[in-house]
Image 1 (cartoon, rainbow, N blue to C red):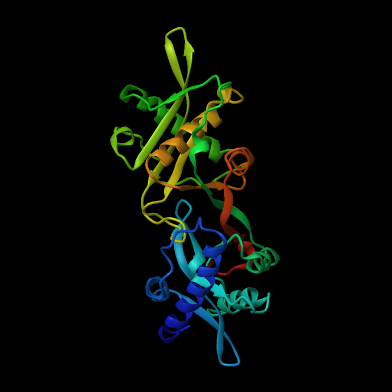
Image 2: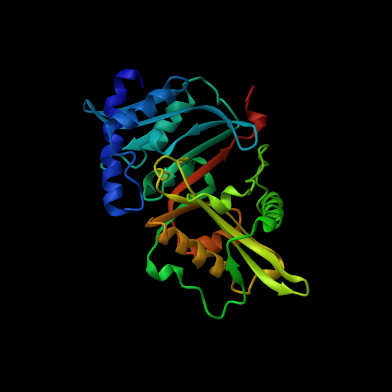
Length: 322
């Protein structure tokens, strides 16, 4: 791939993405312009390598990636969901062929960890990745929100509302418990040096932030047993996170509060806040190695997969300098 290819690659992505958005309006309209996608590809190609595939003089696919640092400081080779595309009538093995050519550009793998993001509806690319040794790491999901989503089950034993300033310490303790849970079996998520969110008074006062807690009564009044939060703002992946889309940023229940209806009450209250604030959809991401989280978000919470983040780990015994 050279800079001369970028305009045609951007047009190919926009063409495929327009069809994707027509089938699923949960994808925001922030990557619908070739100029926007071309700028992204240009920035990525400036420090990476790319591959284009042509057939009978016609572009049928492209792929670009580069080495980045992520997952708690690990060096890895990475491809964005907008960093690759194939035509609808392209051979089903095209992504695999482009990935192979890209890996061979430097004569050896850049790193022992390869990561890419694919759209959930791109079955051919997903299957090529699985056959090459990739597995799921994260799912980015989305769902529409309407009037009925804010109804709390009357049988719920949880009291849910905004936290007080005095309860923010309890929320931050729950945030720490969430990260400890993600560090344990069977998830073993790589630790992030930046840690998680710090819930301060802006999570109570700022209109773009929603934070809710569940409580149970005890001898001293009540105890915070769980929380759920969301924030509307620009963040990655760019094909999902345009500024008006709220993203669920955290959720955790103490073990003793599970099975009380608190998770559904927290979700209903949070979705109600999103709906009342004028938004019509929300997104969430979660580790696929977290059976409890995956089961909740894809089950009772009603989210559907939009993006898969996939990983391939190369055995370091076969990598020189990886």
